[in-house]
Amino acid sequence: MSTSAIVFMAGSWAFVLGLTFWAFYKLLQDKQHFDPDGIGPAAPPKPAETERPKG
Amino acid sequence: MASSGSGTSHEAWGSRIGLILAMAGNAIGLGNFLRFPRQAAVNGGGSFMITYFIALLLLGIPLMWIEWGIGRNGGRYRKGHIPGMFAAIWKHPAAKYFGAVGLVVPLVVMIYYTYIESWTAAFAWFSLTKDYWGITTQEGMVGYLQSFQTISPEGATVYHQPWTAYAFFLGTLFINIWVLSKGISGGIEKLAKIGMPILFGLAIILAIVVLTLPAQAGIGTTAWNGLEFIYKPDFSRLDEPGVWLASAGQIFFTLSVGMCTLTAYASYLSKKDDITLNGIATAATNETAEVVLGGTIAIPAAVVFFGVSGAMAIAQGGSFDLGFATMPVVFQHIPFGNLLGTAWFGLLFFAGITSSVAMLTPITAFFREEFGFKRETVAWSLGALCLVFGLMHIAWLEHGVLDEWDYWAGTFGLVVVAVMEVILFMWIFTPSKAWESMHQGADLRIPQVFKFIMTYVTPVYLLFILGWWGWVDALPILLYEKSAGGGALDPANSPYVTFSRAIIVLFAIVSVVLIRMAWQRNKYDDRKGFVEVDHSGEAA
Image (tube, rainbow over all chains, first blue to last red; front, top):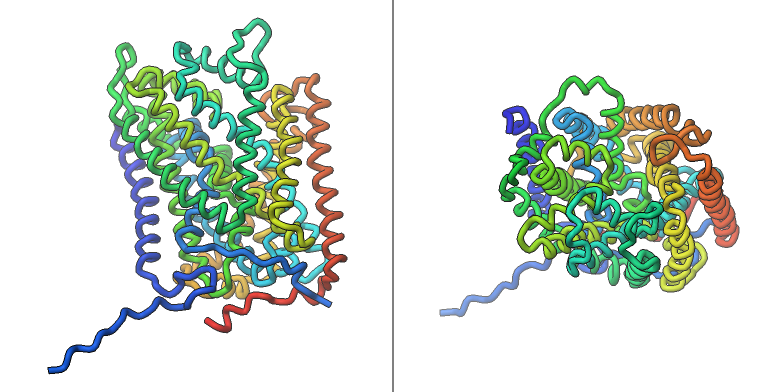
């Protein structure tokens, strides 16, 4: 492959793959709108807390 | 008194990943794997990619966000169809009638698209059973394809029974309608959750196989020469309007903008749900499928077995020859070729069905929301309609009927819908309200520059495309000076062309009448607008 073709291919792939990974990274980070049907809670449940045994 | 419609229970997406996969499945279609590599190869390679990404940023992504915005705004009033969505953003009696084109375009495209989709199902079967094994030339496989399509020339070898094409069309249509009848969460979302991983899995396998194919004796080129064929920049072509139009057209096809399916799917979201991040995630997924995977399979494989000049000649011949004639020849020369052939056509089938099912969603929503019909009743009734006109396409394929519908609905119609959408949402609804609407519940702040692009650049770009295509293509086709499929129109086909156009016009008239009936039945007041039924924003 010529250098110019490699540059265009690498640039094109980097752009679309970068955009895809960035978008899905953001999606996985986000916890606020995980419930699109509006039936469930608006925020994820908090992890259960256990009391430490005394003494 | 204004109201929100007949009150059938409104559907919803079951999960965010289901929504994203369904939206991506709607966008990823035959165009990603057949049309894109051919367009890139014949329009200047790297130069095409420059214009392609400019069109993506100025046309595709802005329109995608606009369609998600229009759709979710319509969902607030339980409107999953374009007439209702237009009426929701422009309180004028004419708004709903502009939306008639939004019912006709997806219906018309779905009918012929399902027929093409049935070819992929048939060729998956033919590959698995090695039915075409032994036909090792491009010309021979074109003859095989024509035999399946029942358009073989006089004296040519016939490989199939005449009913074969009809049987595969019936089966494909049945699957489409069955999925549609199961609803958004129970049918479309499940299909996407199953179909999309299969699609990506098959595409990755095929891309790896193609990239590792050895150079063939007497040819000497590899898949990397094929990638060079696609990506080698020819800057001399950047000043050709045709290259810019080709890339803009490809962006339209690939993102399914103007098809009214994005709007329909987005209407099943509540106003507290994000559309900005979901939208860019689905668009990016589609672009990965197209640029990374779509560009790495068909053309590079053709270059390995036919050389660069041979692949160029094939690419000039059209997308269908590349997919249905060239690829079967390639599969006969590689180990496990019948399984890889099944994978290729299976990939195209899953790409097709996740798009075609979406196309009947807007009209299904219209009948359910405005007339109170059950989903199953609407789905199977539409199935009967699609069957009748699908049979027409099979019987009259050689007379250019499919090309005619593809041009007026699948090409020109998309741009017409997009022009109306952007003008109504960004100009009449006003840029500030549109921007605010898109950012309700948003997980991503859209860069401010896109507000300017959506308001001014995208509409001007679209109007330029509409004007150019109208002058260069649509007018000569309308006046029978050339055929919709390219080249001169055979006078013997003129009656078929006229008849096929008359059907589209009839669909449009019926749509206008149905819209009027729906508004009268539900006593809508165009000036007051609809009553909002989505109050989830207050609770959020």
